[in-house]
Amino acid sequence: MAWLMDRLRSLWGGARFDEAFWEEFEDLLIEADLGAETAFEVVEEVQRRVKKEGVVDVEGVREVIKDVLRRYVRAGGFSLPDSGTVVLLFVGVNGVGKTTTIAKCAHFIRSTWGRDDVVLAAGDTFRAGAIDQLRVWGERLGVRVVAQQPGADPAAVIFDAIQSVERRGGGVVLADTAGRFHNRASLMDELAKVDRVIRTKAVHADYRRLLVIDASTGQNAFRQAEVFQETVGLDGLVLAKYDGAAKGGVLVPISRRLEIPALFVGTGEGLEDLRPFDVEEYLSRLVEG
Ligand SMILES: Nc1nc2c(ncn2[C@@H]2O[C@H](COP(=O)(O)OP(=O)(O)OP(=O)(O)O)[C@@H](O)[C@H]2O)c(=O)[nH]1
Figure 1 (cartoon, rainbow, N blue to C red):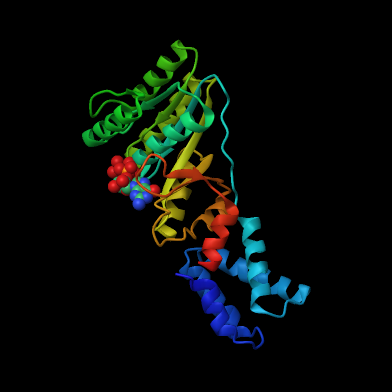
Figure 2 (figure 1 turned 30 degrees about the vertical axis):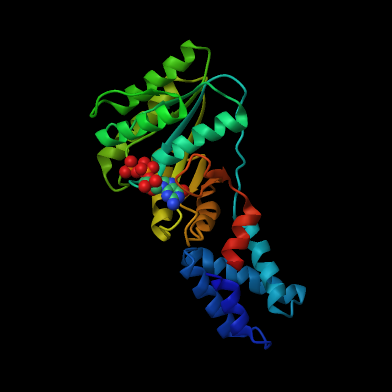
């Protein structure tokens, strides 16, 4: 849907940028899941710059929009040390694509970073199916999966996985967690415990917490990011299901207000369907469709 620029072009129609133009622009940004607060800020800034820079046509406005958004969006970049213990904890609500992202990420780390010491930790002990799903991915990838019975303590499972790589001189642990509804206090407490255990028992590990969101979720994903940020803190974001029609506009307020950098986009269900987040590609799709 080439909505934003198309709509602005048809609104402008060669005339001036009047109040109606800016109001419509703000509505479009809200429609694109930027949230009211961020949309308002973007419009103010674009308006101010258009005036200051004497921009006279809608294509010039497009460049200003992209430039303003470029400053809001944080692209993290992803790099790994060649050796030692790395723990990547994946969090996110049910069904966003966490488990699939873990498998794709394991593949990415092996193929891009050449690290073969990857282990998956089945920390979603809430659902038996989740453990099986991770085992299936482990078999396909040919990587070890550390798991216990359904109902086991997720912190213990993840700690086992860390200890097992440390015994071998280091490795990359990719840990799954239950799809915690962010309003279910007990599950969030459990996640806080997982975080505490990793931080206190694996003090030398390079530890990062990644939130997976579904690109089509909209403003609700902002709320998810807020709650997970409060519970464990977040080091990066994966925008899954970015292969559909969704443009993932919610990433803008998450970047701007919560300062969480985007690291990867998931673009399908296959192992190859994960790539580093590219801010220019993202902005083009968001603005130009
Ligand atoms: N199109 C598309 N589908 C995806 C992507 N990532 C995951 N999926 C699909 O989304 C569905 C849910 O993915 P899971 O990886 O099971 O999600 P989860 O967050 O682990 O879900 P729970 O285990 O229920 O908490 C599956 O059918 C995946 O194949 C993606 O980037 N694009």
